[in-house]
Length: 131
Image (cartoon, rainbow, N blue to C red; front, side):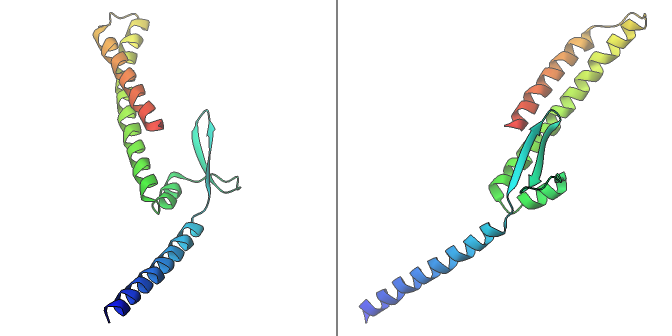
């Protein structure tokens, strides 16, 4: 009796393994191939051989099916937003005194130095977003 129970458990485990592996294979087949073309303006995702680019919400919707890729995309977007904030703030702090000096005023140069550090920090985060 004990031998037959082990036999039934082994056969059941094998059958369940085969069924789940086929189910996983079907899910993988349903995902379209995504290719990314790099240009001066950034990376542009496309589906398969089409020439119509995906919008960011469409790209996120496709990536949600792959948890590792979705987590990586969220992390990259977070770094991009942080970098953009530093670059915009640094540009404002740098540009205002430069504009004031070009207009003939007497600018305070301290914000320029802080702005340059902000721009450098923003480029650092933008580089982390691209990896």
